[in-house]
Image (cartoon, rainbow, N blue to C red):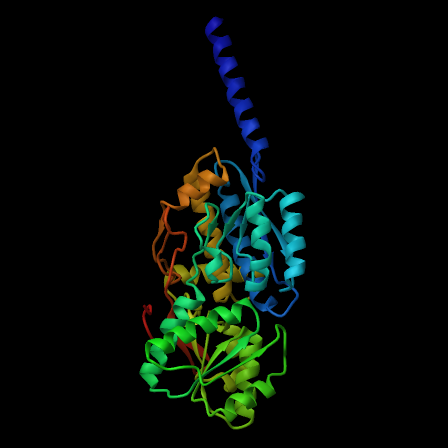
Length: 388
C-alpha cells in the first residue's frame, strides 16, 4: 500500500508539473499548440497570402491527423492585415494577448513584418520565417527570431551581377516599391553593380498598392535602360511589363522572388514572356513532377479545389519545419527549447526542390542563396543553380 501511495503521489506531481508548465507557456496547453499567422487575404498581395495560408493549413491538418505533436493538436490562427502595417500591429497584439500564440510563422510582407516584429519579440514569442528577406528578420542575433529566406541584399547582389556579366548590359535601372522592401533590394542591386564598377543609371519608385506605372516606365525608357530590375510584387510586375510592351519597349527585366509566381505569367500572358526572376524554390508544375510532388499536388487539389503554386509550397514547407522542430523539442515545449532545437537541426533538400536550410546558435539565417529563372512559353524555367 505504501508503494502504491508513493506511485500515486509521483503521478500527481507529474500531472501537476505538466499543468503548471502548460499554464506558464503561452499558447501551449495539454491538448494544443497555438500558432499565429499574419497574412494578406484581401489586399494587394492576397494572391500570395491565400496559398501560403492554405499550404500551412494542409501541413498542420496532416500532423493533427497523425496524432499531433506529442499528443497536442496544432491550431493555426490567421489574421488578415491586407498588407497594411497598422492593421498588422493590431493583428499581432490580438494574437499575443487574446489568442496567446506560442509562435508567429510566415508573417506576410516586409512593411507588415517590420511593424509587427517588435510586438512579437517584446511579448517573448517566436518570430519564425517571415515572408520578408529583410536583414532585420535575422540580425542582429536574437534568441527568438529566425529566417530561412535568402536576404534581398544578398541574392539581388548576386543576381544583378550575374545578369549584367552574362548579358553585357550597360545601363541598369531600378523600379522599386517605395518602402523597406524596395530599399533593401536597391542596396543589393547597387552592391552588385559596385562589384562591377558600375552604378544605377536611373531609379524610380511607386507607392505600395499602385496600379498605374506608366510614368515610371516612361522615365526608365527615357533613361535608355537596357536592364530594369523590379522590386515589385506580382501585380506590379505584370503592370510594369505590360506597360513597357504597350509602348513598344522590349527591355529585359529582372524581378525579385516576390514576383516569382505562376500568377505572374497567368495574369501577364504574352507581355511577361522573357521575364527573369529569382527563385527560392521551383514552382510545382504537375507536368514533369516527380512521384512525391505529384502525389502532394493531388492532395492539395483535393483539399482546396485549386492548383497549388510556389507560395502554397512555401507555406507547407514552413509549417513542416515548425512541426519537425516542435516534435524534436519534446513534450516540455517552451520558446527557448524550440529555439535551441532549431539551432541544431538541418533540413535537407526535398522533393519540392527546396534548398537545404540550416541554423546555428551564431546564425539564425537558414539560407543565403537563390536561383535565376525565366518565363519561357508560359512557365518559369530555372536557368542557373544557386548564385553566390
